[in-house]
Length: 325
Image (cartoon, rainbow, N blue to C red; front, top):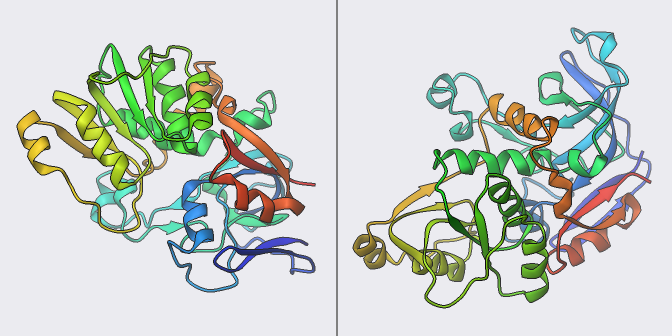
């Protein structure tokens, strides 16, 4: 089979003749259908985060079809279309026992601590291969995982503020937060230096507002993970606002503490989602027609063109994604 190998920072190659995996007990073998490129993938690709070894396989936002099953998994699952939940908590630590698996320090993270899914076939624990109805578009399905991340962030501030909110950053995660907040009835403003990406983000919002100097917000989502992004988030926050930080900086970021104190801002961190409720909730949002997350997708590449996809994903408007060819 073919697999996409990261050989060194920014050096990626599609390799043929990679041995096919075989599902162990409790696992399923999945044939890849489509996969979204995430900001965390780009961080490893670009060298900001070093993988456990080289060569390395990236990719974790995958959709596929079960081809075979390991011992203990019902054979009836063969043929199912599944979305992969790519974070496997240990289930035994304090956080897991408190139903906060998003804080599990021992979890396995696909494409970060264990090899990813950018290959024609891969094995995953059956519990983390979520069956989905084949009536859904592949575009919506490939966005389920980032939708779970965004909805977990929204859960940090429920009940969700009425009125408007600001989303800082229009990368893949920012786009998903934009669409989700608009679906919840908020007017959405976007802070993003790239004009094309900012315009695309506002297209994803059914309710949008123009960001103007002097505007302030009671709810701000920081998705860029940058010094400028955090500064903007705090500066645009009004007194007693909540700022939810989702972006993952790769190094320390100076905190404008004086502004936080004087405005009495609540700063909340939000990481991934809790198993299994986070994924179940995200699938329910799509099943109920509350939103169509595939709207955030931008340019599509075939698997054979994955190196080109990664090279351009950081600047293109919309979420870049891969389809099997």
